[in-house]
Length: 74
Image (tube, rainbow, N blue to C red; front, side):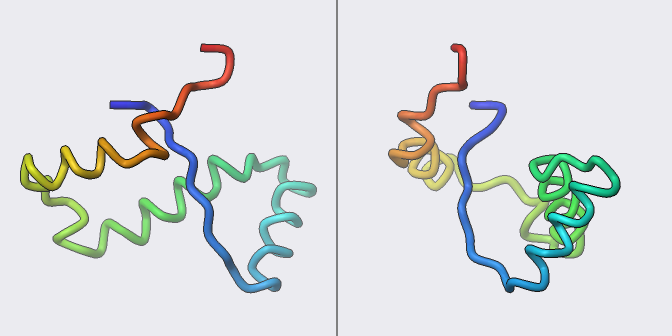
């Protein structure tokens, strides 16, 4: 499985601005901030911590954005 995959979403402007403020003032990497925040939120859900059935996992891994993803410099 890849260590990282591309992920895009839309957020409210005020949230985006707060992220940019943290990036500027606290030298936070957006990738790290996003990963930590999402994991903190997902820890609340039992389903987020339950492995997918093998067939469903295989479908996820065969999605174009994961299957064709190549790490930079790799």
